[in-house]
Length: 616
Image (cartoon, rainbow, N blue to C red; front, side, top):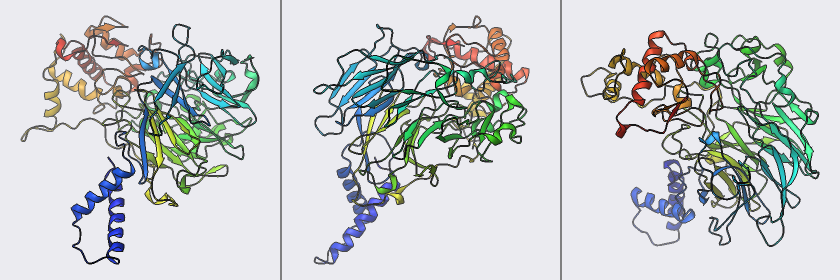
């Protein structure tokens, strides 16, 4: 349903219509506000008959669920005949769940004009053939290009079929895999240059990845094979990865690409994580949530965009020296003064996973020649409110950004914006030949189709919602507010919440209650929920802590306490290490309290506990 802001717009239109009509008809009894609001709502439903998308859009825009349940949908592209091609992924990022049956590539087609795909064909590599899917996908001169495992392949598309029937031809092989960012998104320009993002294996090129006070490797040898954009030829086959094809460097993770008519290449940049977690004496707890900014870069050959020595300070709006390389919390510049800064910035950790240039005329003129960016949503803003989980529009003027970005589509996550509870997370965005905007979701495999059905000739600028400033404060700690009975102290609600939990030998109920508050970020500045989820049932970054299967230790109170204190530098099944005390500065009593709380969660009665978890 459109929200109140958009209903108000329809209400104004309804009133103006009524005024005009009064000049050409006999006097009639004026409509009441309630009747006018009903009329406006009916008009909105008539313009957007499909109201099941759950999205919040500017006035005049409508969304349909084009497809659903197709697997962990990543990037997508739309062919000239309107067929939507999607690459889907699998593996540890999704908890090693069972991949969708059939090939990892999906072809979707709407032959009825209903805004929903009635044809859904799968092809490409399968689990049985050794495939795991991927992120990148593209079209160029009759060929469909897709990332699969360590290569990019090309399928030939023939007339009369929406899926290829011939074998995949390797275009590039031997791309480096593993580490924090194993995805390989790419873009192809009109001359056939294939630009591939080889994102970093680590967070900040530390000697020990994501570990408190671990220094940066100097020079960062990872940059020889990762942390930049590589260029190949989309018209050639069997090219082999090598450092020689590096086009630009110093880019931690550039998942989104857009190329305009003037051949400007724009890429998004995921800023680094864990400034406070790894360097707590130099950064405040709230700076974990607010630094550094996400970035939009103008890609140039030979460009150096700063990673790992630099990060973009959201408040100062400049590149500053990272703590792993001698930075002091944002004052020193060092070599960063000579690196290439972004052309636009966005709130920290929103995770810009994809980007598409809008060059069609179906949307109002306001949106022409700007970019839509799919923000997958944050985890490292915990224990403060997470952010992103939306589609943002950024206007461009030539080779630079124009004005502040706007939140274009929101509501994907549903009731809770967090990695473990979000219903849907935007992971890809593409523009169809008819000007429709398509958005993919990698939680439940949903594809959205967004079109404009408002007034013809409307500019579209009046209905926009500005993005929060990248320099905005973290806000309050994001936990469900306790609602204690009247007459009790404010912490009574939290105490009640843990009253039914068991208590390990050597601890007390008060310790379990304190551990609950520490886990949820109310005490000690801990960010446990960012990796393990608000309910401790796990996310793609950290395991379920409520079960009975343990990867480390025996699940005893003492073992849990030891793991929290020491951290997990080399996790067995998850891509990111856990720093000691989760990166927080906890006292020994606080560590004991968190351990008591985790023990209690994993020892609840079966009716209240899960049994399939695996504590890291």
